[in-house]
Image 1: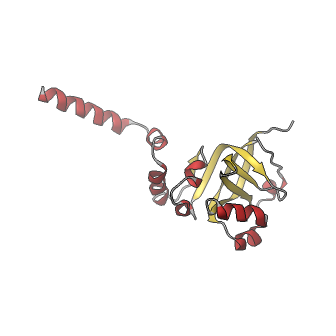
Image 2: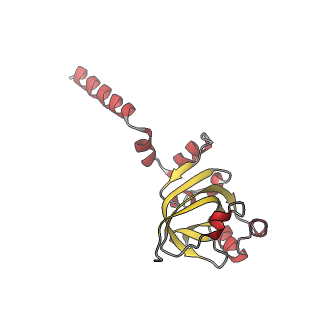
Image 3: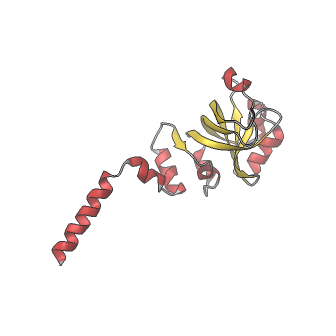
Length: 162
């Protein structure tokens, strides 16, 4: 009986060791994901921006390079920046970088599906003036999660406009 249990445990451990890293990462809690981001200078790919704004301490994400893949534009503002997330209380402000004229030319609409690459930064009035983001939007970001994404590359995967 004991040999059977040891053999079964060995088989389980071997199967777990053979799982691809992305399968393990998909089942990682948000706080564990932060630890992975701390140890990795590469862009972390997420399909749910809630991993960032629902984190117990979203400030841990500041300075991290992130790719938000196939996320829904929840709302837009007059400056051309937009919010991704599920609603007014659960979302992340995405500010388009002035350094990339191609993304400055894009127009985003509520309901668009986008992929954005950039860096998470602390939201503040200073950042609003420095980035050209609307002060009201940056203030909302500051009040909610305290962070925003400075996007240097954005592509529209699916648009609500025809």
